[in-house]
Image 1 (cartoon, rainbow, N blue to C red):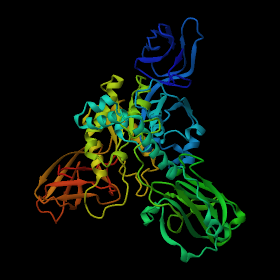
Image 2: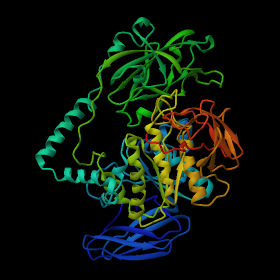
Image 3: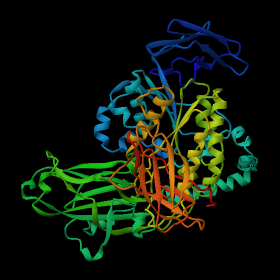
Image 4: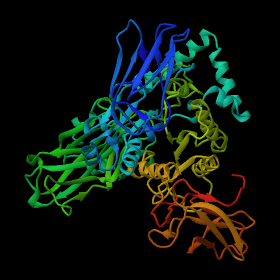
Amino acid sequence: MKLASLFSNHMVLQREMKIPVWGWAEPGSRITVELAGHSATATAGADGKWIALLPALAAGGPHTLTATTPGRDPLVVSDVLVGEVWICSGQSNMEFSLSGVINAEDEQKAANHPQIRHFKVPKNAQAAPQMDTDGCWEVCAPDPARDFSAVAYFHGLELHRRLGVPVGLINSSWGGTVAEAWTSREGLLAEPELQPMAAEFDRLLASDDSELLEQRRKFDLWQQTYINRPTPPNLGLAQGWAGPEASPADWMDISVPGHWQRAGLNFSGVVWYRREVDIPGDWAGKDLVLGVGACDKSEWTYFNGEFVGSLTMEDSPSAWSTPRVYTVPGRLVKPGKNVIAVRVYSHLYDAGMTGPREALFVRPDTAGQSDVISLAGAWSCRVEHNFGIVPPAPLMPPGPDNPGMPWVLYAGMIAPLVPYAVRGAIWYQGESNADRPHQYRTLFPALIRDWRRLWGQDHLHFLFVQLANYMAPQEQPGESRWAELREAQTMALALPDTGMAVIIDVGEETDIHPKNKQDVGRRLAYSALAKVHGLADVPASGPLYKSFQVEGAQIRIAFDGVDGGLDASGGALKAFAIAGADRKFVWADAKIDGETVVVSSPQVCVPVAVRYGWADNPPCNLYNKAGLPASPFRTDNFSV
């Protein structure tokens, strides 16, 4: 006899809902489950699976859960809490760990909340729904919390703080994945527009062995060539690139933080960064604290030619997003000019010193706030290894390491969780579907309806994160697939029991993984506290576009979610554009008038449409009085 892996020590069960408990035993066996003075029985079916249904419980614990069957030792699960349970799913921004956030060290030290528990579902892509998963519940303490999903953690922390009950976070996420991979085959087939992708995967599954073997051979060759490439030899160190003797004439200027691709270095490989810093005389001979930010992917750091620290992808899978902080021994520190050098290696995708800006600094070990030298800004760089542009991966045949196919993550990472009692799901995904924003209008609601069908809850709460601002700002109004994807996400609010966290103000131009996960998690929690738990003093969201009215040469915009009024952060409203019948948008003047915004431009005498934040990285600054940002929107339905 065994229990599903979710039913293990330190688990959290959903309060105020009937509690399914399941596992496997000899067919025909009679199993009794006991918890908090209640019991339920079940009989194992022909496949050995059994499921017992315990009555709803109030928040509390710790309890002990036991499962017994005649002739067997009982299974005992200890330290069981009852509270709020959420599925936390999506791609890399949900997978992003607490160790990589802003002020990560302080956040990790403070992560001592024994009533918050985290269950990490192992990555597993499968063509057929799986019965169980591996994994265990971890109690929130500073050491294990560093690997918790940061968004899930901050969501759970705010719920725990406001509700005063235990919180369970089931983290089922995988970076770089598409929404269709998290949707069941039945969920895709239910939508005519999505049926072709399901049919294509069915065709692939039916391929003969020789075709699949050839696919596997091509993929393995690509992976060996580009992914499993050995770490390149450190040629620059032998040539003195880490020390004061390097010749500036051989180096080019580059701005930090940022990816080196933005500086025209369109390849994977190794690039050295170098910066001279003027050290005050009273710092000489003292230990310094050196922060070089996150380095995408592996890095080696030097001070005046001597190695002071390194973090590589071999050391940690999250090295690409983890800010580095090192101690510089006082013996290396001299007054006046000192040289900091950082060697960065990236084998694919974006690369470089990615910050954030506040994580780039040097200061004495006991510095005050004013004794900090920022290292953001101008650096020099030099190429050590240029491996060229990594080509797209060949299509990989179905298997546990291929998350890119329809329904494979539902089958491997969601199906084993059903029907565990949960309050709802939080979802952070969309970047990998941004090349198909119109399809996402159908795909994303299909995923939500599919999960509700799977759990048998028509009103399963589903809260999601709208894409953050990212990439270079646009100088003039134009089209944006990221804006279209945000619009598709907003459309999903038409489904009942949904909520959206707008984070158009926390993104980073050069990093698709913004490190401010605190606001992301809290805003998801606000939606839950307001919409699910009915807390009147918590705003569910920022302003959401409701309607528009043409008034002569101006357009008046009305909003839901005003919460005490509208506010322009930092002065005049930005990111508004207006167009006439020619559909040519120009930047507009926008002013708050009560609970509306009035938009106009002397270039458009007869306006027909307004857009706000319609760009990859718009300078949005419209908020409500509760401090939550307005969602980007457009009043038109022009073809884009």
